[in-house]
Structures are given as structure tokens and as C-alpha cells.
Length: 326
Image: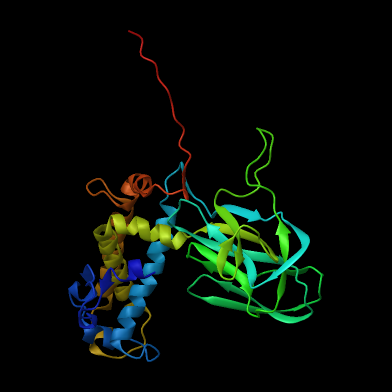
């Protein structure tokens, strides 16, 4: 993820008008472009490419470690809600019609997933179903028989946009109008007709409409683990940057145990280089989990999750009540 890999870089890769990394791999003693080049494998291509590779690799290990630091009482949800429309078909139909699915959740770290569709039209032939979030189009050619419902499964259309329009690419297609239950329920025993996180409205000639047409979708609002980790990192970027720096340095010096390169840098002081790998890895663990003298990422995780204040983060801590008798 760029929010983590961008925290550490190489000085020669600085690009004008872009934020510089918080730490440079070159800051480690004895580690520069020449040292990277002498340790790089032929498959790496260059010392620069090797440096970027070990930064990216260390980032993935850091991400995995972050997930293990979620304190007890907190849960990062995989999804907020799943919903399948319960509309029924009518005898009416319209051209240039469809539905619009909206992500109405309060989460800033979620995305909308369209899982499956049931479709009925009054035309026979192969027609193209379009999913459009105003950023990326997905086109699905489907064979239809007039008046016969078709199921489209395993769509796996995911978007961070707030809504997705579903319609036919062919203007002549007659999409069957739908009769949908009202959103409100009757009393305490009534069932909710739409999800609080997903809203579905009709689409006619590209604009929202009261009647839905043609498509009965199943959709989900899914929590983005990557976005949540970036939100955690962005609250304390320097702490995560120095952790990644130490992890990358440990990764670099650990390479000396496996290299087959025959040069001065790769062969001189192998024992000392491996001791440096252990040294940097101990610094990494200290920043990750804390110590008697240093507060690490784990020590701050609960406060960070509280500050995020997102429905994708659930707090299940037990609350206790005490009484004072005067």
C-alpha cells in the first residue's frame, strides 16, 4: 500500500512536487546505492530496483504485524451489510431504464460490491448489461428471452464510489418495471425493506426515478482493511515510518546470509552484517510492540482506533459501573 511504502524511500528517487519520504534507506550507515547494487541479484536489474523491492517486502510484513496488534475488545469488520432487493416484476416496461445502487453507510473506509443480479426484459437476443460508477464501466453480454428472468452471478464489481448505475448499453431494450415494498416497516414486528447502508432507486434516461426497472440486485457494503490500515498509519506516520525503516534495514543486512554475489561488499564482514540484521530487527520489534522505555505502535493502537470513529471498527469492550457510598 502506497500509504506505507511511501514512508521510506531512496534519495535518488525523489520526484519534484511530490512529498518526500519521512526516512531514506540511505540514512543507514554503510547503505547506499553502490551497496545495494553489489548485493542485488541479476533478476533485480539494479541496486535501485533491489532497494525498492526490499522496501515493498518490508511493508507487507509491517502490514501483517499491524493486524496482529488490534487490541482485545476491538474488531475490524469485514462488511457492514448485505442486501438483496425483494421487488417483483410488473407487466409494464420502459426503454433506457435501470436501477441505481447507493452506498449510504457512514463509513469512510468501505466500498460497494455488486454480487449478483436478476434481470427480466421484453426483448429476445444478446444485450449488454452495464455497471457504471462514473469511473469504471463493466460490460456483461447476456443472452435473454423475452419475459424470462435471467440470473447473473459472481459479478464481483467493487467500487469506492458512492453509487453504481445499472442499465443496458442498447437503448431499445425494454426493461420490466418493478414493484418494490416501501422502505418503512409496520411497527416493532415489521421487517426492514431496505438496508440502512444500501439504497436502491430507479433509473430512467440517466436520471433517478421513483420506479425501478429490470434489475433485482444483491449488493454488499464491504469494509476496506487497506483503507483502515492507512487511516491508522496516517495518525502517527513518523512512528510507522521509523518502524518500516528498521524493518527494511534488517531485511537488507539479512540478505548477506543468502547472497551468491562475489564482491567486496557481499563477502567482507558477513558475521558483522548478520549482527546488524539482528540489531535492526530488535529496533523494529521495540517500535512495534514497545518496551519499558519506548511506547510502540501496540501501546497506542486503542487510542488510534477510537480516533478513527468508523462503523467498520467495532468496540466490544465491557463497561463496568461502580457505586460510591457516602
